[in-house]
Image (cartoon, rainbow, N blue to C red):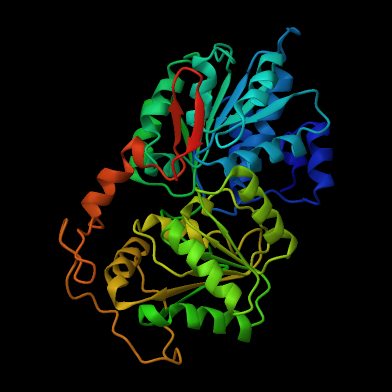
Length: 434
């Protein structure tokens, strides 16, 4: 099937051809005709399958086909919500790329940057807004934007928004848009929670499921290295150096851990940078630019980068720390093996993380292959005891809040979201919480 057979207009086909794309991906083949028909869509597809173009292309076409009488300022007709700043920027770039031959204006709205220039652009009017929930609420409450004319609502990476505690903000925003609208919900994983959200937002939706629930791409080779914690950094440096890796994304659990590992790798002679929520938006943009351009070989990141980091041929992803929520493993390694390219995802697992590995493999319903000879003393990854709820850590003496029920409660709380925007006072100044 070709893009022409999907019923796209000449302007959109020209923009697609400019990007060198000839054949739509499976999610695009299924979703685009349904969206063009005006149907609500619930789409589940793993990362790297072309989800963004799957809703961007038909969204642009429907806005043009159902064009309104010119107004000043332009009313907001389409609203796309994303969980993170990086993803908002990525979707915004896609809208600009595919809409380059159309007279439509888009604006990206997210926290961590000065609100004044966003305010000026919004008051001039735009057709499409791509926003993180917190900053959008700031603008609506300050009357910088009116959502009463929205015709299309898109929830992108909806599962991540649930994980990050955005549900109250999403419900508030939905109350501000017209009830008579088209709704699209796209998600990397397709869980029962997502179906519950869909039932409350979508109207008689058509389900599009390209991949199995919580499945990883077949193009990704996965391996587990069992190793004691104190040797992880040494092994990572060896793998990067011996393999002459030019581009590798390394995930750690904490912001402090990201900064520490960045400095350790630099001492080993490896060009590395860190990406996490404590950095300014300018610093985050700069380190991403350096990574994509090959100026640094290793990007050490917290889970804030698990979504919205779009590199078509990223060859290596390493879990230096396993994620506390099993579903995040799928999001992390989904950064590699994209757009038909092959990728390698390695996890450095110490005995203390064995229970996290067990939860991931339970989610995937399979065992991840182990590397028999790591070059270090063999360790057992057999789960002996799950951490008890709020039990003191044997090493630090501090309480351990990693129990699954505790995690579920924390991630459902808006105040603990990984990229939650915190509003301060009537002036609506915002910053990233993490």
